[in-house]
Image 1 (cartoon, rainbow, N blue to C red):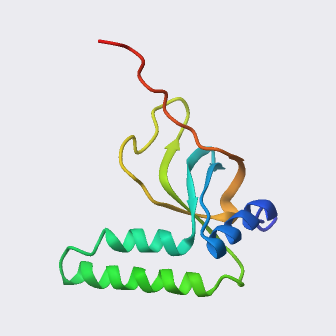
Image 2: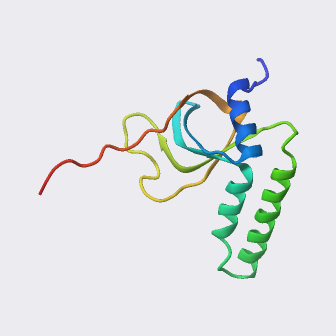
Image 3: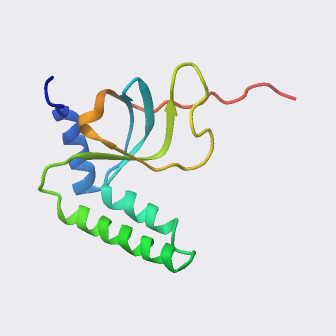
Amino acid sequence: MSEATKDNILEFFVKASNKHGFELDISLLVNGAIVSGTMVAAKEYFENLSESFEDGSDLSQELSNQLAQAGESAESNNDGETHFIHLKNTRVYCGDSKPTPSKGKILWRGKLSEVDSFFLGKISEPKNTNKK
């Protein structure tokens, strides 16, 4: 069995996002599921994740601090090898079913070596055009 490899073009997009902070709508095929959202820098991913724990208990505060530090560390490691891709406003599609989750602003982190293919743009749900 061959070792998993990363797509060089996708890795380039991730490195550019991490280094320059640009966002890119993208859809990924990962183990048969489509993961669709907006690619963000690792630092932004960790900052947003950190904010979700800020207003809780002492443990939540500690988690928030650790995640904020992870974001700082990710930003300072821009020249190193990239292993993960980060998305916001993510939807996961498995077959013909509705996406999971269907509501909310979901953050997602995945291994670049697990992405089978990708296309630029994200899948959006059609607007309900029925007038009442």
